[in-house]
Image (cartoon, rainbow, N blue to C red):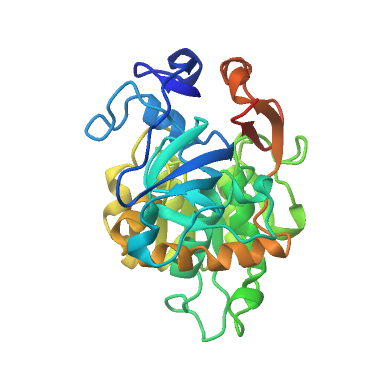
Length: 345
């Protein structure tokens, strides 16, 4: 079968090769064999292939944290009482989606609703689930020091990214997912000047977009959040920007760090608790791996429900066969969205 293999630590384009390898063989007890039907490339793949997690990454390995496939062999069905054979599933728990066939523990498989196609289901995991869990955890409770019923003021960094678009959707649709709550239109931060080509996918979901490439952006950010400051900052950038984000927090506000696009940690001053502010880390992997496996499928219920309504969808920048993945990684994506990879072409 074909598989994309990361041979040594480094950038995706230089480390990954598409090879013909032996198939996974019969699944062991408790495992299923999955015929992958779609997969994609995420920043988490690039970080892992770079060698950032040496304690849990052994080279060579098959990357791919996100994908969908059909269960072809469920040898654990006799013990579970119900078979997954013929069901489409999301295989969680680790990388390995960039191949045609893979064996996965059956309790790591999340069944996909029949009314969601592969191009939707493929992208249900990393960004939509992260956005859903963060909004539910941090944005649905009364903000410290605010009058009851007052919507929180929320700032989202990297506002042009796919996950930031999901966050904006969820915040503006809060009455749909949490009846009784008011919608929130967040303030978005982008690196380029806000006036250059649309900086975000749907400007109507944002109260204001501030471009950090323009002099005076800090003043504009303070104006956008208002005199009381921001109650919540959802940040996937880290680095020196964290000092500015902590400075605009309201008393009792929280900066949620869920990524590190800058490659640098937050400055120590962000953690000094000024005015009762705090920093919290959110890592999807920690959540998924800490839950009992029986709770994984219910975790996706809200995501699947919103995808049926046309929300939490991911734009496809290009479709590529697995056999041409190396060329696609070399070229990179030129437009918004992600690669959709067909493992069988």
